[in-house]
Each structure stands twice: as structure tokens, then as C-alpha cells.
Image 1 (cartoon, rainbow, N blue to C red):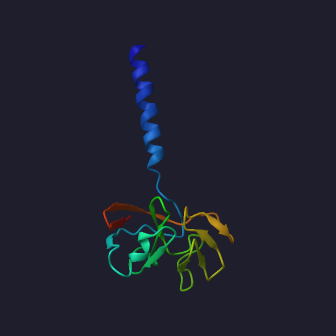
Image 2 (image 1 turned 45 degrees about the horizontal axis):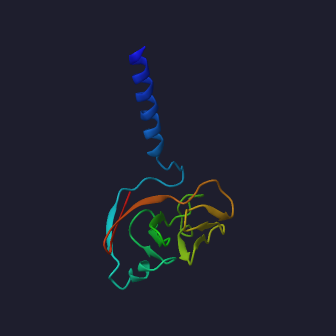
Image 3 (image 1 turned 90 degrees about the horizontal axis):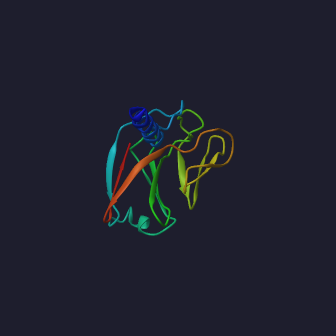
Length: 140
């Protein structure tokens, strides 16, 4: 009986720990491995030092990566609209607190990647961001 209690506790915590590591599953956007460090002291990234500013970084991810300063942390999202296959018009460009796809007009919040308007069921694809001083490390 004593061992049953420990087995139950082990199974519970292993299940809870798996919940935190769920992958972003989207049939439209494939996983692309990358790692990029950006220095916010450089002019092209300096706006990220201030809350509610964003930068589009080309040539990483599928259609680029949008990095946003929420005021309390940094978030990064794939710049391709998550609700259709990447195409010529699926690249999104940040506009203050949101970004919009020119294909169908889908609009998303840069705070959390949630869809604000348009059609579809997927949120923006998030990427990992860590900070070390004025250097941001973005990866998938």
C-alpha cells in the first residue's frame, strides 16, 4: 500500500510536467530549427528597449520572426499567418500592438498571439526568447 502511494505521486507529477511541454501543433506551419541572438544596442533593434515596440527579423523562421516587448517580458512569434499555408501574401508585419495578414485580413495580438479578427482556429506560432542584458536569444 505504501508503494502504491509513491507510484501514484510519481505518475501525477510526470503527467503534470508533460502538460507544460506541449508543442505548438499546426498543420499549416512546419517546425524550422533556428537560433538567433540580437543586440538591442544596435539601431535596428533599439526600439525593443521600450514597452509596446516590435521588430520584424527577416531570414529566420518561415516568413521571419516578430519580436515584441510587452513591458514585462519579450515574446517572439512566426511572421506567417498561422491559419493558412505560407504563401506570397501570408507574411505579417507588426503594427503597434497587432499584426495583420494581407491574404485574408486575419489580425493577431502581439501580446499573446491570439486572433483578434478574421477566420481560423490557430494562434500565432510562438518561439522561445531569453534575455541576457541587452542581448535577446530567439530560438525554436
